[in-house]
Amino acid sequence: MVFKKLNIPLSPSKTIGPVTSLEYLGIILDTDAFEARIPVDKINRMCNLIHQLSRKKRCTKRELLQLIGHFNFATRIIIPGRSFLSYLFHVSCSVDELHYHVRLGKEARIDLSMWEEFLTRWNGRSLFLESSLITNVDLCLFTDAAGSYGYDGIFGSKWFSGNWDDDFIRLAHHKRNITLLELMPIVISAVLWGANWSRRRIIFYCDNQALVYILNKRRSANSIIMMFIRRLTLLSLKYNFHLMALHIAGATNGIADAISRRVTVCTKHLQFSLYSSSSFNFIKKLTRRYWLLSLAPSTRRSYATGLRIFQQFLFFSNIKRRLHQCFDEQTIQYFISYCIGVLHIRSSSIRSYLAAIRYYCLRIGRTDPLRHSNGTWKFSVNTLLKTAEKFNSRSQRHRLPICSKLLSRICHKLNGSFFDIYWDSLLRASLCCAFYGFLRPGEFTVNKFNASRNLTLSDMHINRNSATFHLKRSKTDRCNYGVYIRYYRTNNCLCPISHLHTYIKHRSKLFGHLSSNSSPMFIMPTGRALTRTEFVKRLREVISSFGINSSLYSGHSLRIGAALTAAKAGLPIYLIKILGRWSSEAYRRYISVSSSTISNAFLLMSKI
Image (cartoon, rainbow, N blue to C red):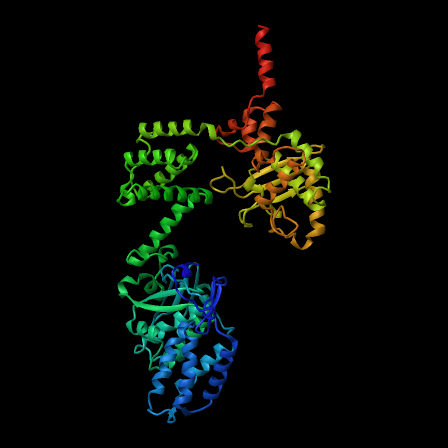
């Protein structure tokens, strides 16, 4: 439509609509798989040409250029092979006419054999390399060699070490060819850890200038060095990474030098060198990472949203200052007013966004923009927040509780015929466990299952009369020590123990092969862990069957209902806080006083 309005002619045979897989100049680009592909017939043609020429000592220039043309096509997606292509082109330039013969020396034939070894095992697919460069320091990868000691390498917590063999030292012309000695541990590290470098574009810092040149050009006059270079190239082709080298002074290559000389240094100190600016950049990245890890994933997402909205406010308000210069009290006031009057954001969300701004300020070393040094709120900020609460008082989102009476009706409805036997037993068990355990939805359902975070079978211990759940992570357990939730038999329709036994029996029949300790505690018939979306959806279906507006109920309704039921049963406040794992007074929001209780209070007052 756009091209028609602009009167731009299009050829239907040359026009392709929006697709995720497109052939361009003979190469298939797939954005779904994030890969580039070469047709198999072209790979077979290259293998046949290589097989023919690698057995010859001479061939015509035309034959060699034909092979170079195929190589040139392949190296569009096989980046490490480009250096070997340039060498073959140099060989072809030794004669002028196409029918003249060129001599294929031993080195050229070995190069062809290397290509043949790779192409016969290659499926024609190459994943896109990452656009950003990464250094060996970022990877915690260090190697070095010393003629009188040996060779060593470390990669994170992994390492290797070895002494030189006498025959290899003689082969390398000891004390005259240190380049070969320093190349060897790099190749060994690629053999051991190359699979971890997939799709990486790695810059390797090296204090040997000759080796830097060889690694970048992939050529050397020394046949022994070329043997190792070919091995390194094959590994980079196999694992799909690209290695480049950059020269640095030996004085700044402290870690690599220390490990090759077997310096007696604490391992923790060895992983960081104060004399290297690259290592200092690495520790700065670690510091930023640990700052982020101090927050829960949900808090990180909330803070990122708050900071993004603050930056949008600065942009639309035409405030042209750097971000760290915009945290003065007046700008904060303008931002709160913008959230109230323009975005119509709830006061609780505004407080979350201000917490993000405060966190960012403290992280970069600035003073708290919201509070005084004694911890009290600044008057202007506190006043505007109170205004926000008044504006948002009419738009409170109400979530109705699922108390014991409604839960009993739900469990009676899930008698094996509402959905099916398995789904009904799964929902009864999860509902009763969530109710008696005061569980938050994220503590027994998942968005994406992770055995190290979510409930698994190994976290449940059940016997005839009781059960225990181990929550590895929860909202108030900030240090992830873990929390144990205990259940006991109640001998009624809401008994969590009997519903758990029934669920486990049906689960074992349907998923005996998924009963490993690391499998999810609550699992859907599809074999996936019970998701929050599916749980709430089916819960609302059951509630709707009673003629009740189910949109007022959510996964959190069980926790609210448990607190309200406990209060009606006369449980003391301290016990409700323990059962619900509340460290603050937040539970008070869930406990409302019924009209019958107030009526009884009136009667008691009238008797005095």
